Length: 238
Image 1 (cartoon, one colour):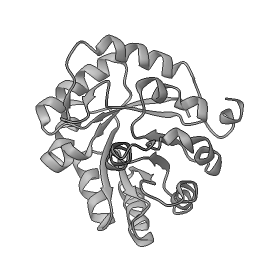
Image 2 (cartoon, helix red, strand yellow):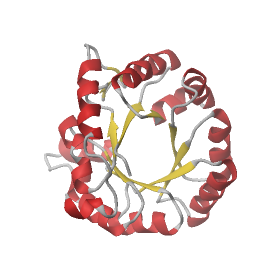
Image 3 (cartoon, helix red, strand yellow):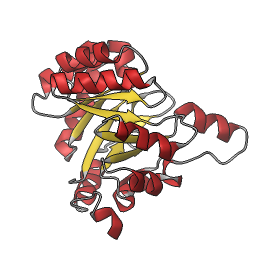
């Protein structure tokens, strides 16, 4: 799969999401993510606004679905999302229902292994249940809580190579990565590079970061796209 740069719009209002998205697309970002804070704050209207403003751009709705899988996926598909996110910790039937909705509405399903006791096995389970993508994810609260107790917080990079080797679907790594680490995830065989905090988002406030970041984003996109195709065959050589 050709490397993709996705920006996570983890803001809490539509104007800020649109402003950040415009800047990101000018810089060369490929996919937009309606982040969980935006969906909580604005619901389907946030996705609708992104679709109206950017009719041809893939939009990931980070629902983190745990139940009501078909309905949630249907709602976001009708609002304009091209991809939805379901949690591996959900019941198997919920994951199956999201996948069914994906087929019904022609959208991609991304399975998230957040909080799984065995992250590699969870990734494989998501693939076995027909998710088209795996999100290898270390949670915000988990990282901060462990660090606050003076311990080394886990990183998605700790097991990223093992997750990639366990599945044939595209993988993205999410959770506490520096920009430099995120940019290097294709070297682990993960073609979907997600950018959010700290480059574009102030993590604690969930607001767009200040300063001129468009040039930085443009450079990042150029470097990530230069990896070319990354996937089951290519990952054996990186």
